[in-house]
Amino acid sequence: MKNLLNHLVDLFFPRLCPVCGKALNVQERYVCDMCMADLPRTGFHEREFNAVEQLFAGKVRIENASGYFFYERGNNYASILHDIKYHNQPLLGEWLGRQFALETAGSRLWNGVDLIVPVPLHRNKLASRGYNQSEYIARGIASVLGCNIENVVSAVKEHETQTSKGTYERLMNTKGIFAVGRPERYSGRHVLIVDDVVTTGATLLSCAEALSAIPGVKMSIATLAVARLS
Image 1: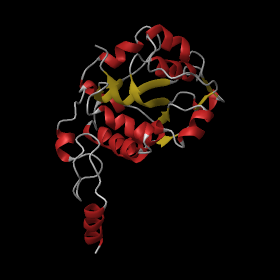
Image 2: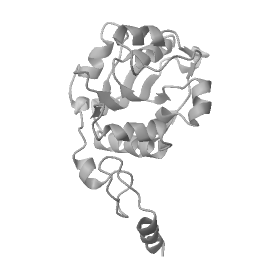
Image 3: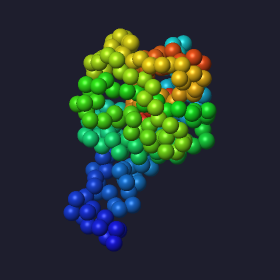
Image 4: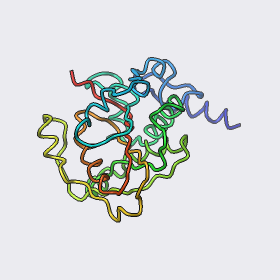
């Protein structure tokens, strides 16, 4: 009966793949099998000192860092991030976070992680959007790793959108926007910082700098997407 209902729903209210726009079948969740097979995966979890880790070299100590797939503005796969972030599709982010963790299970990216911290939104942006997309991505990852998600960091200062800013402007725009309350509670923990996309790394750097106030903290980074900068 449940399968019949699902077929009827898909017949009259078809779910569409955000990448190619084709109708999903009952077995397909949020992205069609063909587009998932062609997802431009980075493979960074297998590479030491990969492009994401290089963004933070000499700025803040990061144990491991990686992103699931490459993001290019105007590419069909960019619509995944747009749907998650702007089109009220946070569950798509949760599902992809889970796929990311499942596909990279056992890799060094997750070594020693015992706490997951999503990059927070300022309360004004959270009220406007209604959800924090990074928290949903973190939920998907946590479902595989079995780690707790904790909102250790808070966004204490609202900042302008990063989209049209250069590297230096992004760094200045995000400087000091995050803070950690009662850092002693998380002393000695290995924190996995989760965000939707990394470009220049400015937002993640600011978040990591705030977390560095925790005594003995270790930090790793996981993002759903990595922007191609060239």
